[in-house]
Image 1 (cartoon, helix red, strand yellow):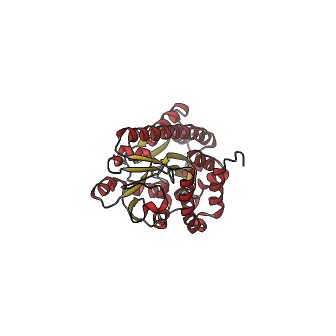
Image 2 (cartoon, one colour; image 1 turned 60 degrees about the horizontal axis):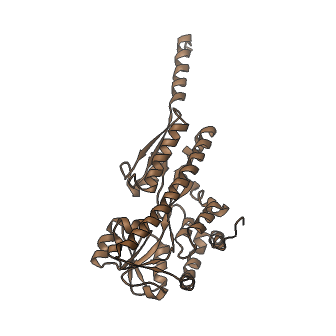
Image 3 (tube, rainbow, N blue to C red; image 1 turned 30 degrees about the vertical axis):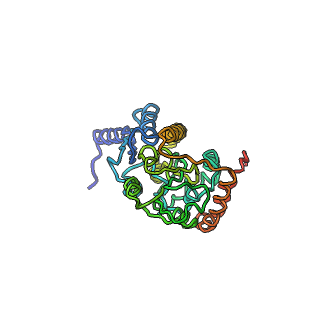
Length: 332
């Protein structure tokens, strides 16, 4: 027996569809830092701009300081579409792509401007899509800062580090970096760095100025070499299926907002690192060592075997593209 379709049932069905269509898209943005950091303020700015420009269409829920997910659980939750935006450290993506290890290669980039040039060119942008097969799409690079070497003795030449133990992130490239200059390394969570330096378990570390000052690492490290030898960045990522399922008109607006927020975050990160460097210098606890051009080249030459060691994993084309930006060949 065929069901009887009445006018009332059609009206109810249409009302239901209309109600569903009116439901705003919800974007959950989880991160593991406080709201007063560049990344934390970036998430808040993203929420404000989205809700100003797409009122009633998109709602952004921000979960700062690991209130929703821990660092270790974030990416799998994103792949399950339980959250839609994250900004993890580049080191956290090693399971999904080896290409991002280019940013860990020591002394590859001259300075922050070189990093910016690389990230804006074709090969850098290509890295944002290097995890699509795992359901992760990169939207932007957010800066945290370039890394500086700190230790219990001055590090001017590569062999000055021989015999010291350094705390490192979980990265095979960084492990190889210290092995290359006769040092040893210990992988420790960032929360344990101060205690490890205080107890003498490790004698050195590598961090951006903002980490050094905020965690008071300078009070335990009498020498800090302004090496700018590696990149500590985040990648703003979304669930690929979610991102590409968004209505085109909405996605275009979101992409514009991502660009604006990225500029703001990166400006804040640069200003913060400059300010924290000044605070470390003013504290008088550490001698800041500035490398001469010749000393820096000695470090770069000492580290080239590490580039070669990981070239096949990362991609020779990517390493070459990163090297090229140092020549400041604008427009190439």
